Length: 205
Image (tube, rainbow, N blue to C red; front, side, top):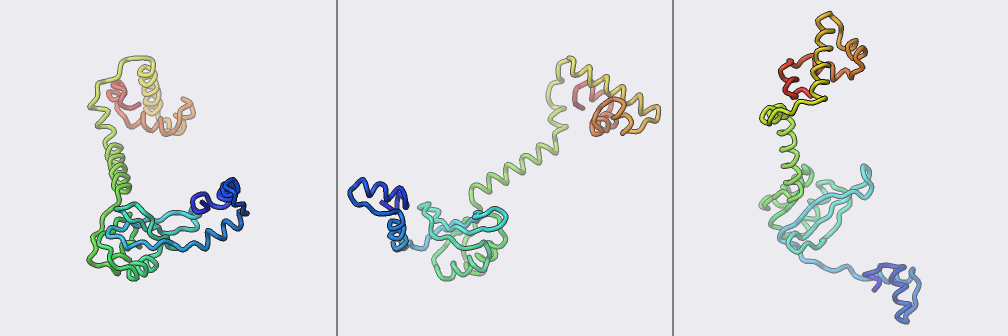
């Protein structure tokens, strides 16, 4: 009961069952319970987690096939993981993140083990790669779609473009243009370097 509910809740349930104990006694009994012995997994999952973000970290070891926690190691240094792997032989496959420290520990302790990336990092890296690729070709996506419908926004865009270029032809600087037209400097820079055709199509907005 205490193992499932911990101290306060376990003591409360035990009292209802006719075995009143204090939560401190329940916790002492819980601490005295022997840790279960788990076999060394064939496929081991290795990942770090924060005990206190940016200050204190630990390493969790998981049996990937049964999804049971095998052990928790202090820190996330390569020497700690290497020592555990040498004391617990039998791991054939290691599923890990991109940590260079973990990779070095596995290479030294298990030179014949197969290293695989875990599913979360594969999807995360794929999403980041797609995001960067889409951002790099944002102008291409704008050109491939149909032109936006004429409206107030398009008219305002053309008017601002014309105002910026009229001032620039008179030798007015970019910062001065931004102040006179009450626009941000980045907006003025964008209008200054784009041709009118793009703005007529709504691609410079």
